[in-house]
Length: 187
Image (cartoon, rainbow, N blue to C red; front, side, top):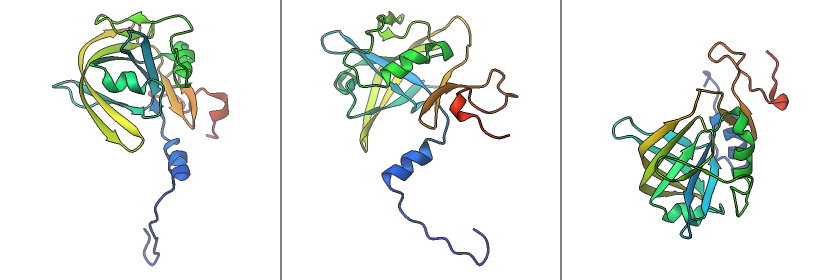
């Protein structure tokens, strides 16, 4: 705030808040678990974070309206797949409301036996630790029980301005823009 200028804080509405949050580039993950019948279910999330190194909990947020909510809300374990650039199509598929997220080829399995996206950059297996309601989402917290690293570090999928993309080829030191054609900015 500058001297002599008064700004009034106001509550942001849902539309404005979503537009503001779309300006934050976030990593993308696919969280997966079998439902009560053993059918693999999952969802794409950009709200994923490690919580601490010891113990190693992670959190991921799930929309209460998601098709996979029932499976994820009652699961004891879940896996998280961090997709690379070449795995963007499955991440986009998981972001839609489909009854069978694995219809396009079936899941691979993590060392813990959980469904996952084949070829992900990393796949932690998680034991459910806690669930917390948060507005129209539920925060799932799991303890990493193991993690499988992909063949190479790769280029992760990110979400920015309501579009999937990936980081610059050289990061740090890259251009700072995403490789999505609609996202090129003046420099």
